[in-house]
Image 1: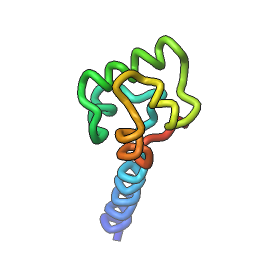
Image 2: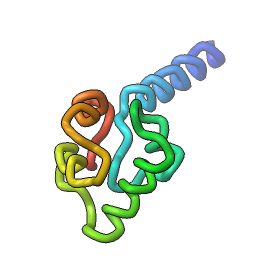
Image 3: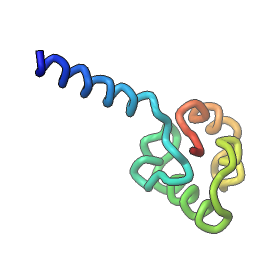
Image 4: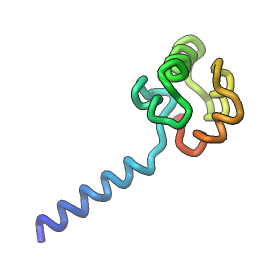
Length: 83
C-alpha cells in the first residue's frame, strides 16, 4: 500500500509539471527552446530582452522581442506564464 501511495504522489507531481507553463521571466535557455518555434536565437533574444527591460508583464509582451510575432505568440501563448 505504501508503494501505491508513493506512486500516486509521484504521478501527481509529474502531472503538475506537465501542466505548468514555462515562466518566461525565469526560464533558462533550454526551457525556452522547448517551446514550439523557439530555437536558440529566439530563446537568447527573450533572455536578452528581459535582462535589458525587466520582467514580462504578460505573455503578450513577447511580441516586443525581435523575431517573435503574432503567429509565434499564438502557438506558444498557452504554454507560457509570467508568474
